[in-house]
Amino acid sequence: MRPQVSETSTHGSSSSSSSPSNRRLNSLLKHLETSPFSSSSSTMSSSPTSANGDSVFANIARGPEDPILGVTVAYNKDQSPVKLNLGVGAYRTEEGKPLVLDVVRRAEQLLVNDRSRVKEYLPITGLSDFNKLSAQLIFGVDSPAIRENRVTTVQCLSGTGSLRVGAEFLARHYHQRTIYIPQPTWGNHPKVFTIAGLAVKYYRYYEPTTRGLDFQGLLEDLSSAPSGAIVLLHACAHNPTGVDPTLEQWEQIRQLMRSRGLLPFFDSAYQGFASGSLDKDAEPVRLFVADGGECFAAQSYAKNMGLYGERVGALSIVRQLN
Ligand SMILES: Cc1ncc(COP(=O)(O)O)c(C=O)c1O
Picture 1 (tube, rainbow, N blue to C red):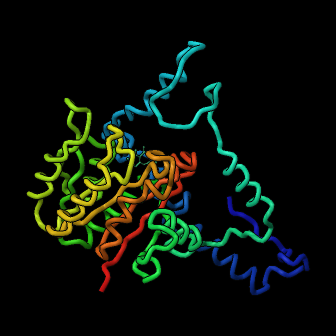
Picture 2 (cartoon, helix red, strand yellow):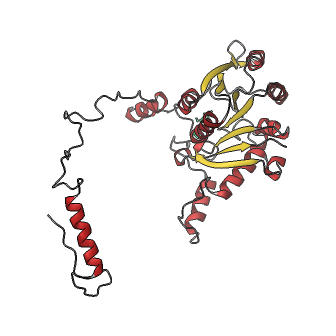
Picture 3 (cartoon, rainbow, N blue to C red):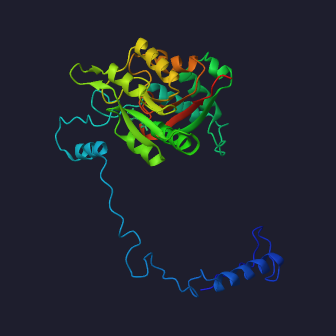
């Protein structure tokens, strides 16, 4: 049925059907009625199916369930009164309920009460204050690299989004497409990097017999990595082993990587969790930045701010000192 164009303009005053605006609307309606997209004249089927009647999605295989989130699904189904979900590393109250940190509640209140806040589009790199403060959190308030304007930070979707943006940037613009990741590592690392277009290789990291770092194996594997290769380093609280190099070992890793021109890509998902100090946990990253060389750093606020579902994170790229 053809819609009617009102005889009343949007300003409420009466106007005849031959007014310029109504004439424009009527010719637009006529055009839509005769266009190939209108239902009356279209030869396209109105049902969202392919020509043979099957759904266009019929041949897409269902992806596997996420094993970690699967634990939460099983937990929710379980009727036991003493159940505990250890599948996801998230703060809980004594009663096992989700915990929102007091500082986050206070910040939310400040934001709600601030009527000067608006919802305009942000610049392409995100909220500039957030980016500035994120860089300061990981590189240090007095970081020479920040002072020298060598740091570029982009707001991203939590740690995973920051890793993905960094990896895609490297896959598109960097000459070496191989990334070395520790064995073992967080299960999503190989998937994120492969999907972004990088080739994934492993370096030795964990020695099960000592339940410690396989430092010799790590040095040997990084020594034989091709010049320019990217190396993923857990900034602190290595997931899943909880084993971190000492600061002296970090210094040896730094010297080796710089001498071979390897590009450090830090994943900082637990800043504050290893030592209880945000600054102390960032020391390995700051060691690499202090030598004036390049590095990437992906930050997540999921764990240290308890903002798991809000997907707050940042990717920083540090340029070389000229
Ligand atoms: C080592 C590591 N990197 C990155 C992430 C990404 O976390 P998110 O995307 O939730 O910030 C995690 C989460 O568990 C992790 O353990």
